[in-house]
Each structure stands twice: as C-alpha cells, then as structure tokens.
Length: 197
Image (cartoon, rainbow, N blue to C red; front, side):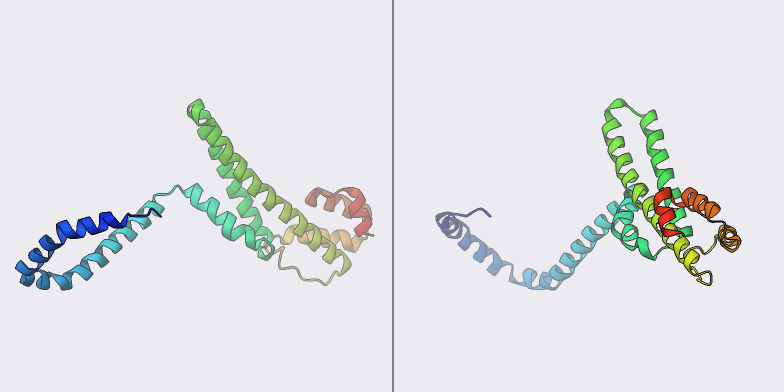
C-alpha cells in the first residue's frame, strides 16, 4: 500500500477543511434529511454489483462451467459412482472433445493453441474417468469371482453383462473368464491370471 505524505494531508485539511465545515453548517437540514437514505443507497449498489457478478457467471460457457464442476466435484467423488454414471460422464466428455475439435477445424489458425489446450484438459479428465472405470470393473469382477453371492451395486443397470459373467463363472471355464475380464478392463493377462485362479 502506498504511503501518503503527512504534509499533503495537512495541506488538504487546511485548504478544504474550513470550506467543507461551512458547507455542512449551511446545508445541515438537507444533509440530515438525506442521511437515512445513504445506507439504503449503499446496500442497493452492493446488490447491483452482486447481480452483475451473477449475470457474468451465468453467461460463462457451458463447457467451462462443466469443466470446473468435473475438476471440483465429479473427479473428487469418483469412488462413489456406479458404472452407469461413469459411462454417462465419459460420453459427455467425449462429446465435449468432439465439439472442441469441430470448432478448431472451423475457426482461424490463431485460436488453435487455445483449442488444443482445452482439448488436452478434457482429455486429462477423460483419462481419469476411464482409468477409474477400468479399476472399478476389475475390482468388482474379482469380488464376484471370489464370492458368487456377492451383490454389486456398481453394476446396476448392466444386468446382461453381469449375468453373462456369472454364467462364465458357473461353467468354470477359466480361459473364457480371463478373456472376458481382459476385454472389459484393459488389464494384462499376466495380472488377470494371477488374480483369477
């Protein structure tokens, strides 16, 4: 913060102080009548400024607000999501990446760095979502393999795939189980053979 010289303050008080006091004394009735309205005027100004901030936030681009929501809310609670929610989020992020690529193809070369940064940011979010889904799939398949009576809330809405997997377990065909898990989780066969015996 800048320091104001004391001499300047004294000079302003000497030059303008008597004039200000005389103005206050001459217009005492007007000033006392307007004093109650000053507080409400200040409150209205604050409300107008708050409304402008809200309006500018509302005008923010949908992808930008969704990106901040992904970073601050969705990625934090990935472990609490089921497969259907993860798939929906992955589909949404992939559509955002496609939108950015379309905009990049239609617009000038000058905006390409901006578009590539946005696309890279969304791809980082996509990688996290896909990795979490792959890890959760693997964990749930392993739980079902080790305990056929295990009830998985993670696979809610994927009854067909789950019943097919349970059928493979009941047939006790380990190689088919390994292939199924490899195709659905992107894990290496060495890791799958180690965990599913």
